[in-house]
Amino acid sequence: EVQLVESGGALVQSGGSLRLSCAASGFTLSIHWMSWVRQAPGKGLEWVANIKQDGSDKYYVGSVKGRFTISRDNAKNSLYLQMSSLRAEDTAVYYCAREKLGSDDFDIWGRGTMVTVSS
Amino acid sequence: EIVLTQSPATLSLAPGERATLSCRASQSISTYLAWYQQKPGQAPRLLIYAASNRATGIPARFSGSGSGTDFTLTISSLEPEDFAIYYCQQRKTFGQGTRLEIK
Image (cartoon, each protein chain N blue to C red):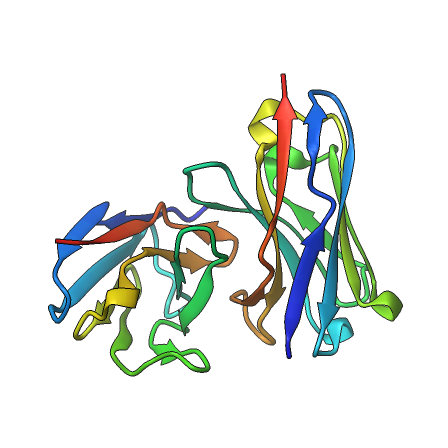
């Protein structure tokens, strides 16, 4: 079964750090761009970051540049998001999402992991 | 940066009725548009890609159309499980969502 499972979400104080993980199974991670997408409570979807198949290219939404780092380990079938200098506005469910081959669409999503930043 | 505007914000319909959801782009995006369904407490699910192609396992009652700046997601006859929030997406931008609720 094709699956993404996130972990690492927690309650953290403003200014703190957290590392999210996403375990992939049922498909070859190394051939896909991968993204993190977040959703603040009661709000819509916001793309956060993505990473190329071999990790050589990474892109971020402006609000997290310099604070978040996306990375991957294809040998471990895993995606990561290192978050630092966390702010209250980073509070959200963070989803790991697979980008469909040859497009920018997200065809597989994990169930998400909750990050709460207290101020 | 392209902005996607969805309308209406909320749509109230009864099971069996036809639903028409709109997504408008601030500039032409050809057919590079996807639609997602999200139910409470669940992750989004890809419904339509490239404006009009149903994703794997998506029922035929879901259809997408449009090109350029105006796009439509149509649900031909609403089933109880279709009441959810729907988002359009182009590249790394999402619309604000349309909530489809039971009338």
